[in-house]
Image 1: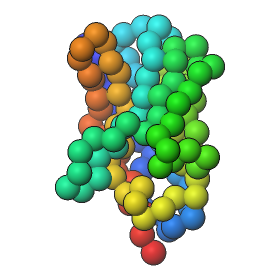
Image 2: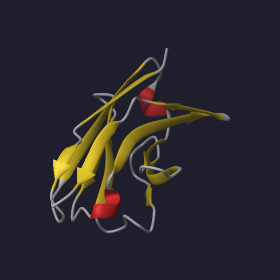
Image 3: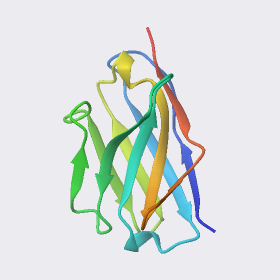
Image 4: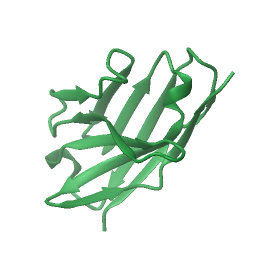
Length: 116
């Protein structure tokens, strides 16, 4: 059974930083690309960032490029998202996402709130 457990969210002021983690189990983590998606209140899912299985190729939404950094530790089955220079509009629930064929698996998410 695929399990994805996110952590690291919280309340932060604009300009602050957070590091999100996603602990993965139930599948061969090192064989799959992963991504982070987020859902702001009243909005749909937005793909924030993706990383290939080896961890040497990454992609970012324009809205976070230059501020967020995705990485992974395949030895520890863990996905990360380093978020710097946070903005009010980054407020959302963040989920790590695994796509297998046409199916997406997501964890319960971790809340990130950017507020002064």
